[in-house]
Image (cartoon, rainbow, N blue to C red; front, top):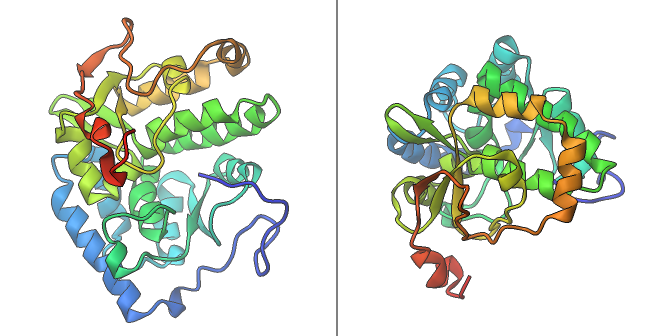
Amino acid sequence: MSAHAAAPPPGARPDWTVPQGWDRYTAAEHQVWVTLYERQAALLPGRACDPFLKGLDALDLHRAGIPDFARINEELMRLTGWTVVAVPGLVPDEVFFDHLANRRFPAGQFIRRPEQLDYLQEPDIFHDVFGHVPMLTDPVFADYMQAYGRGGQRAVGLGRLENLARLYWYTVEFGLMETPKGLRIYGAGIVSSRSESIFALDDPSPNRLGFDLERVMRTPYRIDDFQQVYFVIPSLQHLLDVTVNTDFAPLYGRLARAADVPIAAVEPSDKVFTRGTQAYAEAGGRTGKAA
């Protein structure tokens, strides 16, 4: 989501944006995008939520390779008033929140190498654009992202950014949605990953629990492996309504006094879609070390 830094790096504007430099991508880099896109586009029908799939079609992200932000911004602006801006990497919290609050989504420029197709620790342009931007074509989710940015600006002064980051992680990055046809993915960290697109819905290991704002903000997360818990929203409108109708100041006060909920825990008050075995994490996960 963001990083801490005092000043933008050389070549970046004061708001940390840079030219995308689309004409500098190589044929090999474009091919990586095509490979990743075609693999996910074949996998996601029946797994990703309808707003994501509609957004993917609306923005025509396939074409011949890495999208030109200038092209996709025309349609994105028309649909929801958002734009994608290029940044040189992770940006400071304040910069990140300012962009979201003004309906700008900061995206990295670089794309992973062919040997990194299945796992990359730092988000690249495929994660940022394929994973995030289709959902920004949905008016309700677009409003949620702007509300999150404004909430982040307030949270900076209240010292609760850790809790707010958990909300982003378990919704924008790794959120699931309940639909009449079953659980569907809307989180960017899932839809941009072939392996997690399967794991998040099919594997018996993780817990899948109903979304509760305070519960989510008390729950730590994994940054280096599959999640041990996914939270399920009933709808995008519910997510937006809960966010904009909550007074976060007293919520942060309660969070300051409350202990974290262990990442693999199932609380008596949780709505349980799946009580996971936690077998993947207990076996050491991707790292081979006990979680």
